Image 1 (cartoon, rainbow, N blue to C red):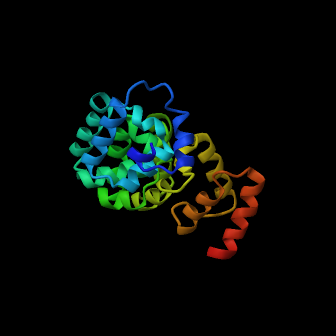
Image 2: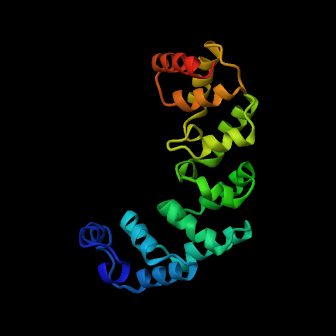
Length: 212
């Protein structure tokens, strides 16, 4: 791990505990060659393996190559896919990343806009049960694609929590007189989505003095 992946000895020691089941370097070597072929730098490979050692256990032919092929089908360049690997790490090994990106790309207007600000928190969320219902509800609240895209890239993102919780936050914001679709509405939602109702009230009162 130190010589082939560029890890520091402490990182290599930590990573090796998750790779102890490997009996041959064949699969890790294939993954490293695949990453090099995508254009990841040695530093990016080291960071990826330190963060997600089990990436070296992924099947190139069964998982990584098909995902890359589908992403190319979404008109992502190989250099952009390399950046995506660095950004998402573990999430890149999940085939759901393709459907997640396919859904959120229109919100950002282009793959470059998306990659510039993307975090992987929402890509880990269930697209059909969580993200899509949340986006649909927020569109009903008057938020446009630009505002929703700004919520998409937060960590944690309000789009990654249950729709019921989003509705509770919106109801509290409504009760405090913040107009839906207003600039303050998105800021309020961003600020209170992960708070209790009591803290929501205090936070929105503070936002009122800031934005109104």
